[in-house]
Image (tube, rainbow, N blue to C red; front, side, top):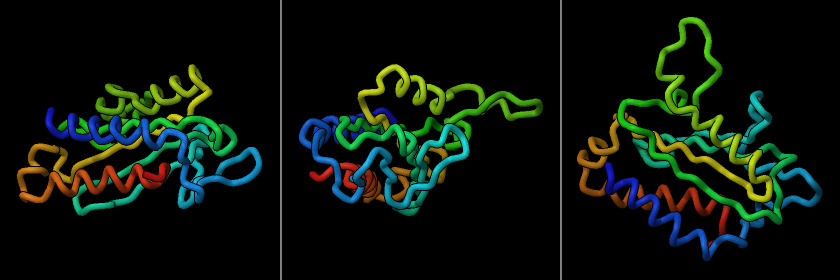
Length: 166
């Protein structure tokens, strides 16, 4: 697990400095509002979201700022979050407590933390990328096939290509 998180961190750090100011032209739209291609507006906080399976076994959920808060001239910072063992994307994002909720909804609240960071530093586009293994364990997922580390690298590169030209 430490190796996978380290791999993701190294990929992000090595590419973020080179790509910081090179936003993908397909995501630049004139005017104030930036609608990211393929994203939908969430009914919660008007954030732009998209979910997909890029590589079999890896669910990707991306949460970007609202169209009115996404600035084409702001630096964009991606946080790739490999979910902890046993957790789903919904549990990791979190939600307001409600009677009868599964306790897992109330342990991480990465969605709330992302909104806090955006409010604290509005000069950057903070984007959270949730990466969920279909086995709910990155260690088990990686051991299932010898090519899985390459699949992780390809997934990270694809996600980066959505926002940066590298």
